[in-house]
Image (cartoon, rainbow, N blue to C red; front, top):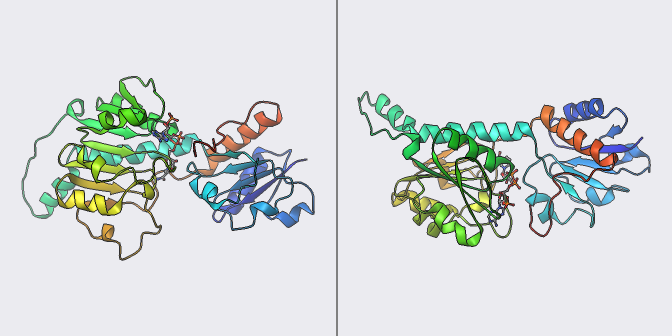
Length: 309
Ligand SMILES: NC(=O)c1ccc[n+]([C@@H]2O[C@H](COP(=O)([O-])OP(=O)(O)OC[C@H]3O[C@@H](n4cnc5c(N)ncnc54)[C@H](OP(=O)(O)O)[C@@H]3O)[C@@H](O)[C@H]2O)c1
């Protein structure tokens, strides 16, 4: 019977119970000591406390409950040679799709402007543009970005994606690599960020990139706070380059109370809830991957350390 260690700060009891039910042939524990010196080949982690990973005897695979694993990589705590499996799960993709569609459509159809007009008791019709005449670009076309781009294209938005390698998503223009970036963002009216945080993508959304967008465009960031140069977003909002910045993720979380994003009229924020890992679907994804691995199949969704995602 192999052991799985669960190290999570929230919903620990739920995860432990569900993992045990999904993998009854394994022993699920929540503390290293419970293994009584025996090897613990698998660990399911969020943001483990310093020193904990190194103390797990016989660790062979690390399952992250998060899609973004930059925190684990930056901690330097993952033992050399132990693969990290990132979270790729239907629940996460559905959550992100809902958040992006909600925010994109709210801006596309001027809902916030109409709310403001309503509060002033003003009948103020605005020009309404059909999705087929609206240019939207999605940065990142992986598990989340490709799902989002596909749905936007199905709504008939003029959809482009930007990724490292070329993609073939029905109805979507795919741009890739450093050479494709400018074309991908040029003239975009809504820019959606779903990139992973790596040295190559950190601070990517700066004034130069924002300047390439259409005037009065909308930035929607569901990736990571460090993708965005905060001061540049504020400047782009103040100059009218950006009409709004819809932000779910921040350099520091919770967002410090003194940060100008809280009060800027052009910023609309949600507290890192765009796509929450759902235990129901995530446990099934881990169990499925682990069972396949034990049956001799390669592990799926292993982080490529050289790429950083
Ligand atoms: N706000 C939230 O609640 C929340 C929840 C979950 C995830 N996230 C964020 O969303 C991110 C994306 O998740 P995912 O599952 O979609 O990741 P993924 O499947 O690994 O996709 C990443 C995409 O980004 C592209 N990319 C990476 N580096 C690039 C570069 N230097 N230049 C151009 N394209 C690059 C990749 O290109 P290739 O396809 O060519 O490799 C890929 O298309 C996560 O890393 C996390 O930060 C946020």
